[in-house]
Image (cartoon, rainbow, N blue to C red; front, side, top):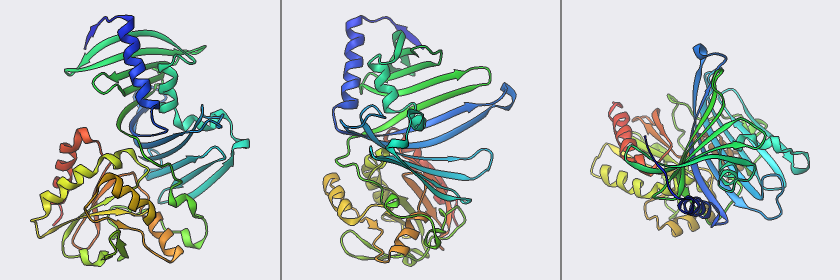
Length: 377
């Protein structure tokens, strides 16, 4: 690491430009790859990765989350129960909805804003509110600020401590983009408990809508279905594309399939279309491989606007089930980190998957998809 001193004026310019990029639009979406390092002693330390998508919307009337509504989707592997977990948090200023999807449990909790406390938003630590507070020195004392070079890339380093606390915060700002790149929060180095947040896929969506899965009840007989796991077969759903054509999953049998599961309220998903075009172009001459893009949660009217704004021309399959029970069943089965590239064998069985997307790592993602696809007979 190379550290170079810079003037106070330049320091302020970097922070102000980064702050402006975070607040200039009413709605901000981004992705975080979080690594949580925790344990009782150094000998039993756990390293827990999670993949998190955030959307924040400004709300002048909101008072609990510093003037924001928010949505968070998180996916990780539970280190104790050894199961994959997907959670959704949605807060619109009036209430908080918390959904949990695992092979063991599908549940929902709802709290009215009158029953919420600041501690109820601890799940959002390290995301937008923390970044804004550090950049504005709001509740934080800046310990040091330096210009730094890591792997030939230029960053701006800020070390900060919360007022009346000793929890060390270290923030790296990408100087080329004027956007946060990395945040480390060190609560304890001996136990230890350290959280490392890597930011990517910043986007400015036009709308902030409650996910369709959260508009439906998830308890009762209609909602006993669990998210599809590797080794399970994707059902023979009969759906439609946005252009009105019929799409039968049964027709995919006999070929290997790259099934992209995506949604609108997802920063990485919004940056993925150019990569999807590349995938389609790469495999279009291969008679043994299909590439399918599936949006199981978003309604057609929202998707029509979205593909028009993004100028998407490739076919998009959506959850067109008119029967409410069947539509909810699809949403429950498709609960997973967004986006996810499911690799299906010739019988539509899920052979493997690649979770998440980062435009800066698209070559690695493409290579991983190809490797997993080649592993399927």
